[in-house]
Amino acid sequence: MKRIIITGVLLVSLVSFAPNGKKCKCPKLASIENSIDNLIMMEKWLQEDFDAGDIPIHVANNYMWIIINTKCELSKQYGKKTENCD
Image (tube, rainbow, N blue to C red):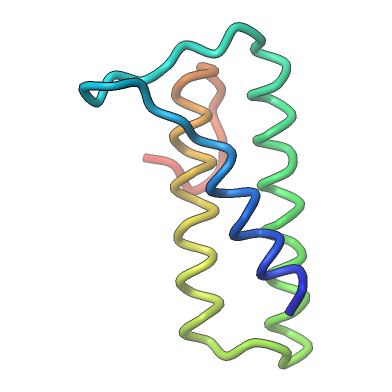
Protein backbone atom coordinates (compact mmCIF):
# COMPACT_ATOMS: atom_id res chain seq x y z
CA MET A 1 0.00 0.00 0.00
CA LYS A 2 2.95 2.30 0.62
CA ARG A 3 3.94 1.83 -3.01
CA ILE A 4 0.55 3.12 -4.12
CA ILE A 5 0.87 6.26 -2.01
CA ILE A 6 4.43 6.86 -3.19
CA THR A 7 3.31 6.26 -6.77
CA GLY A 8 0.62 8.90 -6.45
CA VAL A 9 3.02 11.45 -5.04
CA LEU A 10 5.57 10.76 -7.76
CA LEU A 11 3.00 11.02 -10.53
CA VAL A 12 1.82 14.38 -9.29
CA SER A 13 5.39 15.65 -9.17
CA LEU A 14 6.38 14.30 -12.61
CA VAL A 15 4.28 16.49 -14.85
CA SER A 16 4.20 20.26 -14.66
CA PHE A 17 2.43 22.77 -16.88
CA ALA A 18 3.06 26.41 -17.61
CA PRO A 19 0.35 29.07 -17.28
CA ASN A 20 -2.26 29.20 -20.06
CA GLY A 21 -2.05 25.43 -20.55
CA LYS A 22 1.25 25.50 -22.46
CA LYS A 23 3.62 22.66 -21.64
CA CYS A 24 6.94 23.56 -20.08
CA LYS A 25 10.01 22.52 -22.00
CA CYS A 26 12.22 20.27 -19.96
CA PRO A 27 15.84 21.40 -20.21
CA LYS A 28 17.24 17.91 -19.69
CA LEU A 29 15.97 15.07 -21.83
CA ALA A 30 17.77 12.63 -19.55
CA SER A 31 15.42 13.54 -16.70
CA ILE A 32 12.41 12.76 -18.91
CA GLU A 33 13.93 9.44 -19.88
CA ASN A 34 14.58 8.66 -16.19
CA SER A 35 10.98 9.57 -15.37
CA ILE A 36 9.73 7.20 -18.08
CA ASP A 37 11.93 4.44 -16.68
CA ASN A 38 10.54 5.13 -13.19
CA LEU A 39 6.99 4.89 -14.50
CA ILE A 40 7.77 1.55 -16.13
CA MET A 41 9.09 0.32 -12.77
CA MET A 42 5.93 1.59 -11.02
CA GLU A 43 3.86 -0.35 -13.58
CA LYS A 44 5.70 -3.52 -12.60
CA TRP A 45 5.19 -2.84 -8.89
CA LEU A 46 1.51 -2.19 -9.44
CA GLN A 47 1.16 -5.48 -11.33
CA GLU A 48 3.01 -7.34 -8.56
CA ASP A 49 0.76 -5.82 -5.87
CA PHE A 50 -2.36 -6.66 -7.89
CA ASP A 51 -1.18 -10.24 -8.52
CA ALA A 52 -0.48 -10.65 -4.80
CA GLY A 53 -4.02 -9.51 -4.01
CA ASP A 54 -2.88 -6.42 -2.11
CA ILE A 55 -5.09 -4.03 -4.08
CA PRO A 56 -8.53 -4.44 -5.69
CA ILE A 57 -8.95 -4.39 -9.46
CA HIS A 58 -10.70 -1.01 -9.65
CA VAL A 59 -7.84 0.66 -7.76
CA ALA A 60 -5.23 -1.10 -9.91
CA ASN A 61 -7.03 -0.01 -13.09
CA ASN A 62 -7.13 3.62 -11.97
CA TYR A 63 -3.45 3.71 -11.07
CA MET A 64 -2.48 1.87 -14.26
CA TRP A 65 -4.45 4.39 -16.32
CA ILE A 66 -2.62 7.27 -14.64
CA ILE A 67 0.80 5.66 -15.06
CA ILE A 68 0.26 4.81 -18.74
CA ASN A 69 -1.10 8.25 -19.64
CA THR A 70 1.71 10.03 -17.78
CA LYS A 71 4.27 7.81 -19.51
CA CYS A 72 2.71 8.54 -22.91
CA GLU A 73 2.73 12.30 -22.36
CA LEU A 74 6.36 12.25 -21.26
CA SER A 75 7.20 10.07 -24.26
CA LYS A 76 5.65 12.64 -26.58
CA GLN A 77 7.83 15.37 -25.07
CA TYR A 78 10.92 13.20 -25.37
CA GLY A 79 10.03 11.88 -28.80
CA LYS A 80 10.40 8.26 -27.71
CA LYS A 81 7.99 5.45 -28.61
CA THR A 82 6.72 3.41 -25.66
CA GLU A 83 4.22 0.59 -25.22
CA ASN A 84 0.47 1.27 -24.88
CA CYS A 85 0.71 4.72 -26.50
CA ASP A 86 -1.34 5.57 -29.58
